[in-house]
Image (cartoon, rainbow, N blue to C red):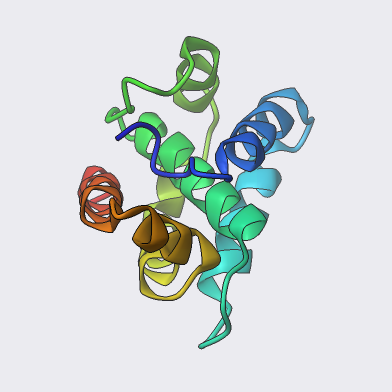
Length: 130
């Protein structure tokens, strides 16, 4: 199935990862992306925000020692040495649920006929955050 943020969201996901790694305040980049998804309160998440939130959650999972094999090695290394990143696990789980519940990304996967596999990948990500 590939990266859970793909199907028109891959570029947004990798942009978030690159931005976090290169930023002086990379932890804030991740936290802001998770907050954007977590704080929607019933609003529909568009692909850029949904894909970025899943990428941010992947960075948090990597910081907790459970990286995706699809995450670039540079991102895993950055996540493992970024203080405070692992502490965002609860917010990352909330963001994953928001993306699963109501997002343009979910709709695209549904249209592709592969929403069950996508959903399983997002659930697996959330488990890596527990």
